[in-house]
Image 1 (tube, one colour):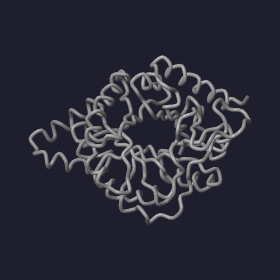
Image 2: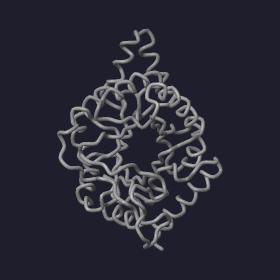
Image 3: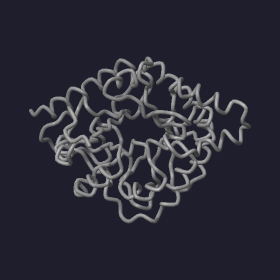
Image 4: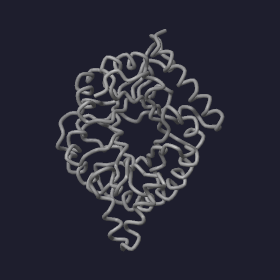
Length: 296
């Protein structure tokens, strides 16, 4: 067994263990392997090991890999900050966008519907839960045994998550900057271009009090389908507390979009805590891929 196969099997085993500890079905959790800065050859090796869900942060890198690996029919997740002028291009290969954080991006993704050609990243069937050369999985099953959804086409809706910034330092700075602003102005701030729509923020994500407004906008977009919420646990914060906050916020969003119950949270260092708080989508990179080999 290769080092990559061993790391993949180890993470999959830990996910199953954490799910059982939380009295959850492991099949309800989708593991996305984040392959940024790694070559397409590593992604191809992951596909041989049964991985069908792949995440990328940068558009140019994601597009190149999706084009090169098109015959594998992987399901590509775009998880990085997305510029509105790149939205149309991202729709050419991504089946899921995890980082919607402003109204302008919703409008740009909506405008790109139907204008992109055939998708190059349509989800495919994987090859095995714990690696090894085994028979193919049933259609529509993930590498952990969970449903990955129906096979996509260019005419289908784009699945998406609202990224939420739960960094208290960013939120406090933003709140001070607009404390006296009327709600209409706050709603418009969801559309601020720059880093995630968070004035002065260092990571992406809209502010918690603006999430419902953004959910309403996505719900009104025919070519988009809101799956739920996404967050990145801030450095120095107890991750489980952050994940519990996102879960509570999700309950409010479900009053607007009842099916938007998914939670994209948990990375290499905190995916166990995320599972315990109800994560449905894990974004795991270095714990599986190892050290980045092509930074630049």
